[in-house]
Amino acid sequence: MLQSSVFESLSEDTALAGLAALSQPTRLATLRRLLAAHPGSLPAGELARACDTPHNTMSTHLGVLMRAGLVEVERAGRTMNYRADVAAFRRLVTFLTDDCCGGRPELCGDIASLIPKITKPANEDVVSPTFNVLFLCTRNSARSIIAEALLERIGRGRFNAYSAGSDPADQPMPEVVERLARLGHDVSRLRSKSWNEFTGPNAPKMDFVIALCDSPQGQVCPDLGEKFVTAAWPLPDPADFRGSAVERTTLLNELYAMVRRRIEIFTSLPFGSLDRMALKKRLDEIGDTVRTAP
Image: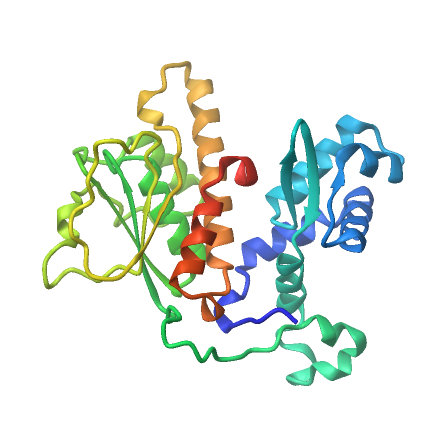
């Protein structure tokens, strides 16, 4: 049984994405076959044949399931194999049954066996809830600003999101702020700032520090406290992109999708059952662009 904590619950947006992905017959059949094959994985060609679907169409369906967080991909030589993310599936079931039958999930029958039990870990080194997360990049004008806005929404009060830069710009990129506002984010508090604001005795102590620079060489993080978990999620800097307005909009949309996917995985981690070393490993995996590409 998956060990869980109350901090694994899905956001409503993530749950809606999962349910929308499963609302199509081929995708539903695909996930059922992957769940049956778990913990094994299946190549796209085998899934296409099993579902009587053209290979290119199956690739599209698998992309939707991946973006919804229900399927993972792994590379085996030149072959891409797909595996059901059973933990994500359980979280989706838990979301649906969270208020099941007035707190009596046994009335739901066999589905109750999929609902994780909430347990308290005994390990004293387990990271505790209510986390401060600092996103870093050079200018603090695009990538880290997007990450801060997304975590504020997806974390829904379970995480305090911050961002900063080693050489901050005067202000965030206007097109980034405009895009976030159009997507319904509160942009009133977003600003570019130095990471030095997070040093000193009165600064909030961080639980996680995540660098988003695609070229972090030569950057030395300042002293942000004694204990926090670090990770690198390298992403392209839109400030370096030269292209048409349409191409820049496409880049920002792709960047937003990549950051959102990583943060959705991050906020769904079983924090109550992972120590710091395990969390570090999981965060590094999230930064793997092959596994989390949109």
